[in-house]
Image (cartoon, rainbow, N blue to C red; front, side, top):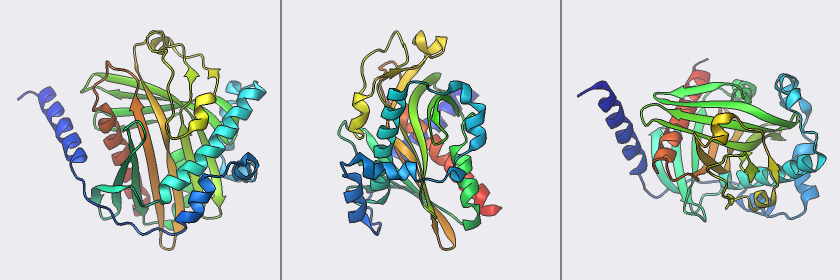
Length: 309
């Protein structure tokens, strides 16, 4: 059996194990009703306090300074992006704290549990709960998760992140490129990203895609965000690279993704919420599972590194 074949078999076995570990979940949570009410607020001024009242110290001034040349000068687009991500934070809090209708999907280990439910378009909404046994590394964990312009790899899947546009130190647009050599897959997505201090011991980092015109000549069909309805009225474009414009990469779309980091006594709770889908029929349908597994293992590896420090 040649090496390439072994790699493919190993990868598909990993996905098969990932996709066939379902059982009923029982995860006690507190404050769920309050979060439901928060997520359903219609008053934008109430939601706006999340971002407007967040102290600048929690955001990376260095990242902002390095990318000021990408600063958006369109006031209308900036306000649209802010309003959209204020809602996205509320949705992230909601999906991080609810118990039903999630079901237990997989236990990676005693401190890494994956739950899953279905979105309106039948795509998954996954919640990975990790316990990080080093509460003193709260700020380091946040900064590591927020830091763009880095490459993350696990096995044969590489995830490259960079900032595409800056709205303010709290809010950016990012481009993610995903490459899997074994499956000969290359994909990308654009998404807004915001980092918000909810309280002194809780921080949220949230991502969401909208109808961003990236000038992909082979994929111009509009995308509907089935979780964050506010994203569907966004109107904006981005000057993408030649390979995206030529349709060389498969296009992905993020309904909602992000992290909720909470201090909890002798450990940190890290919740990773993710709902993503393909918009390109030429890509293998199980590639989302491959990407999810890679992301989960990247986070588990980060948890282990921080816990051992």
